[in-house]
Length: 417
Image (cartoon, rainbow, N blue to C red):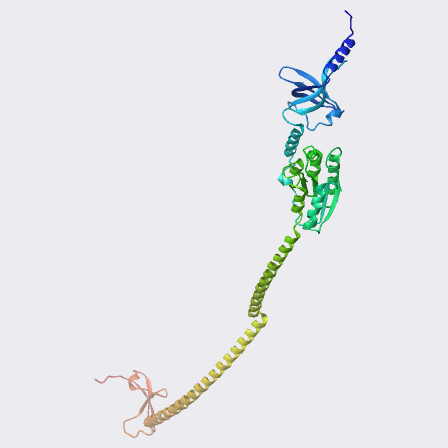
């Protein structure tokens, strides 16, 4: 038997393996996945009883539509190769599909779940569309039917808008970078709204709008974005991330632009309502103004001054009337007093005269000179006529007649029974 070196043996095995297993389909579970800086992917494929090493080189790895995950069950299209220096064989993978479903569908669900967890679909991040747009950027293919549909709708509905078209590839190689770059550039130019759009097609045709870089460009844009990709039944990642999803490109323009005819009717109706409201407001304000004028007149300085002047005139008139009444009253009282005084004076004078006459008579009757009867004299004390009853014992008194005054003293006082 011919003796072989280890290298020779590995070389024969390598040739046999690689000739016999140039293309195989292997199903198993991914494990120990390593994404190398070079772009190569190293992993093992296993089932319940066995494992096998595998590698997917950078060129094939760049065409993967989904991300390899630990424990994911896949079907691999590969060739069996031997790494001669270690005598280890492995699978050289050409393509990988998720077991039981298509790669694109799985990649779609993977990205959708990942972006949802990052909050890309949250309502709190959605930017509102402006009520009336002035400038729109259409990011789409300049040769596609979608652009013509959108321009037709805009021309028929509302012409008072500026539309710029960013011509981009919407499918195939280079389309992802083209759409992403157009979003970034248009976002920096101050448009009111960006419309990312293309017509319908297969899932492969629409896949550009399921790429993560496009989704990130939409999410981080400061300008509101409408995603109008495909038909109503197509739902893309861009639809979830965008601020508004339009079922078709034409619907996007209908969402953005008002119908000029309806707008004119609305304006006419609003004008009528405004006129009616304005007239009502004017009427109300006139009433309020009249009320204020009346209130002002009631409380104005001039009115208060007039009221005070009238009050002063009334007070003066009342004062003059009171003075006149008082004067008349006093005049009457004066006349009455004068009359009564005259009567009183007359009465007093008459009375005084009568009293004087009486006094004269009394004086004359008491005048000693007039008293001629024998045995009668006037009794006085200290020049005053007194009653004999008032004299006490030892009291000095005078007896006076018309001719003589006798000074006497009471020696003894006796009562006559």
